[in-house]
Length: 382
Image (cartoon, rainbow, N blue to C red):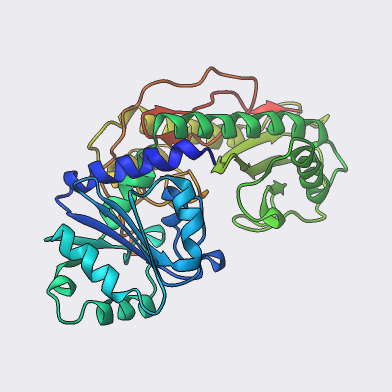
């Protein structure tokens, strides 16, 4: 990831603290090379081994309290104005840093609805309470869900460029994949061709490679998050590919659909065209409805209404999700008011421009902060 992005996101975090009337954002971590705190990757290019605290203040203060042997990479990053090393315990230095800020509200990373804002483990939370014994700060802890969600959703100009480049890279690979969608080719072979092209370009998949791309041919192929199989493409099949590229630390997530012509049916059947047209119309209507401040479930409802008007069963998932560091990047969700989708929030977006159309089938359309990447096209016959 480009070094400048970390500074941009820290600056953005400070602005969000003011927006949400928070005085400090406290990220408590340990052994980060094992994973566990997704927020760290947004604001820091280093791993931390010992129990460590990154404290971002509304006043612009940025303090890193880390184990002595973790100090060097933190100092080298230049991202934190104060880097404190400790030996035996982080507690004294953490309390001192909090006393300096005297925060009323301290945001920490827990959430019941957004996994990417839920990086603080229960064990570390208990450790934090131990460190704060004898102070009033444990009473001032609040969820950082809004802050983290906005930080992930509101892409900086640099992030927008990287996301669009990832989408363009994936688009090129979809065009390549079309050459391999021929009668007799298997789902596995189509996926392998895309993997080979990725390797040649020095890119990786946006999610685990065994199910990226997802390739479905014909009516018996598994729908959803399942890997490609030995099913062969046959004339008359509809072929669907769900695929994403990770480029420079940012992900794309797009889909394409092809119809494989047969002698008896050189054109897509009427029912296929009906479904395709409905999906496209639903996406376009939802896209036109989006504006800053709109609730995500209302955008999803536009698409569901379009399905109902066309006499189609409703889809059993959200209309759209955030992309960024992760292919499911948390933050804003365009989804229904279901129990499993409990992080609905307003859209902090300004729609600016669509990308130019290219000769490719319909894709999902990722909306990124102040820009949108969209593709238009027609159901392609092969």
